[in-house]
Length: 193
Image (cartoon, rainbow, N blue to C red; front, side, top):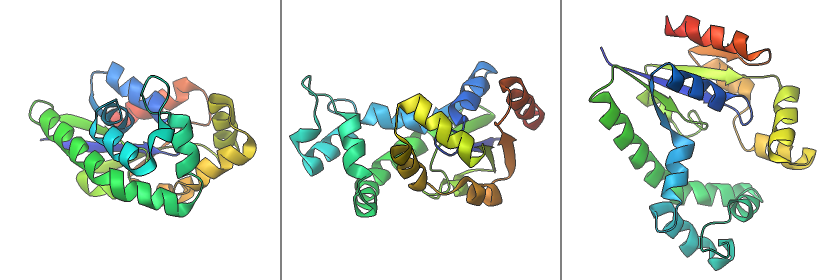
C-alpha cells in the first residue's frame, strides 16, 4: 500500500534535520524548499514571475535572484506575502504534485517535506502529518543564530507562519526537537516502525 507522509514544522524547528535523516534511512523525500530553489534558478518559472513582478532590483550582479532582497520585500507586509503566494503557489503546487506522483510510481512511502504544509492546504495530499516542533524560545534563538537575524527580524519571520501550537493540533504525530538529536531520531524511528 502506498503512503504519503507530510513532514512539517516551523522555521528553525529542525524539520530539515529530520528530513535529511529520513533520506539517510532510504526514504524518498520531496523537499519543497529545494523545489522552490530549482524553480527560482535563472530562467526558471518562479524566477520569471518574480522578475516581472518585482523588477530588476531583485537581481544580483550575476543575474541570479537576491534572496535576501526578495525576503525583505515580501516580509515587509502581509499584503506582499499574500501577493507573493498568489503568484508563486500555483507553480510550486504543480511541481510538488508532479514530483510526488513520479515517486509514488516506484516507492511505497513518499515524504513531503513542506514547511507551510498546513498554511497552503497540502495536508489533503497526506495520509498522516508529522510535525517537528520546538518551544518558542528555542525556535527564536535557533533562527537568530542560524540566519544572523536580529530578534525583531526573527520574530517577523516566525509570525509569518502558523504558530507551532496550532500546527500541533492539526498534526497526526509530533516530533519533539527540543533535546538532543539522538532523542529526536529515536522518535522518528518509532514513527517509522
